[in-house]
Image 1 (cartoon, rainbow, N blue to C red):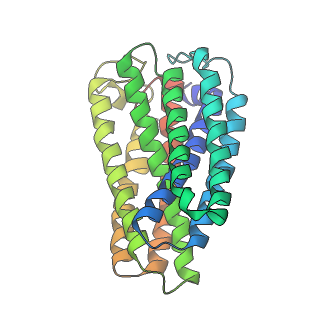
Image 2: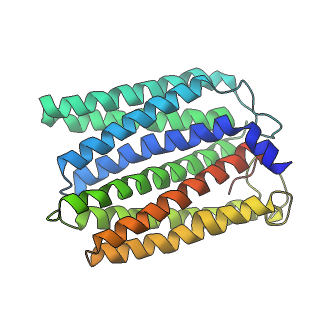
Image 3: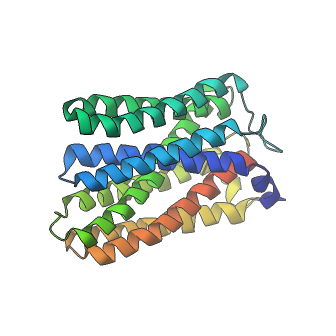
Amino acid sequence: MASTQIAENLAFVNWTVLAGLAIGSYASVVLLRRRTAATGGFLGFTAGSAVVFGVLAWLSDGALPMAVADSPVVDDPAWAGPRVTALLVFWVLAAAAILVRRIRPAAGGWVDLAVLASGSLALVFAALSWGGPSAAGIAALLLQFALLTASAGGVFTAMILGHWYLVTPKLPEAPLILLSRALLAVVAAQIVMFWVWVATAAGPADDAPFSALTGPWALFVWLRLIVGLIFPLVVSWAALQTARTRSMESATGLHYINVGTILAGTIVAAGLYFGAGLLV
C-alpha cells in the first residue's frame, strides 16, 4: 500500500528531483564562480546542464495531475500558474546568462541574481501549492525543498567538477574543497531537520511524534535516514578529505556514489511527503 501511494504520485516526485537538480546546480555554479577559480568550461557546461534540467522541470510541471492521489497533501491550484511561470523564467534567464557572459561578461553577475531569484520563487510557489493552509506547513515544506535542492544540485555539480580535474590536472583544489564542504554541511542540516520533523510530526499527515519511525511507512523513513542521509554524510566527509590531499580520482568516485545515494534519498523524501504527508 505504501509503495502504491508513492507510485501514484511519481509525477510530483519527478518534479522535485528535476527542479532540485536545475536550481541547485545553477546555484552551485554561482557559488564557485564568485568564490573560486573554477574554469569557464566547467562553469558553462554545468550551467548548460541546469538549463536542460530546468526545461525538463518546466515540462513536467505542465503535466502534473490536478490533485495529489490518496494523500493528506492538498494541491492548491491557485499557485500552479505562478510556479510554472517561475520555472519558465528560470531556464530562459539561465540560458540567456550563458550568452550574456560571452557577449558582455560584466553583466553576467546581475543575470545570475535574476536566475537565482526566479528559481527561489519557483520553490516558494511550490511550497504554497503543496504546503497546506498553515504558514508553518508552508515554511517547513519550503525548507525541505531548499535542502533537497542544495543537496541534489550540489552533488551533481561536485561529480561534474571531479571529472574536470581528470582532464585539467593544474586546476586548483579549492573549488572541489568548497563544494564538498558545502555539501557536507547541507547533508548534516538535513539530518538535523529529519529528527526535528520526526519529533514534531511535521507534515500534513498529522501523526504522533516519532510515529513515522514505527508506522506503516517506517521502512521508507529508515531508508531515507540511513541510505539517503547518514551514508552520504560519511561519503561527503571522505570526499572532502580526499580533495584536501588532492586525490581527485578518489574524490570523484566518492561523489559518484553520493550522486546515487543523495538522489535516491531525494526521491524517497519526496515520495514520503506526497504519498504519506510525512516530512523527513
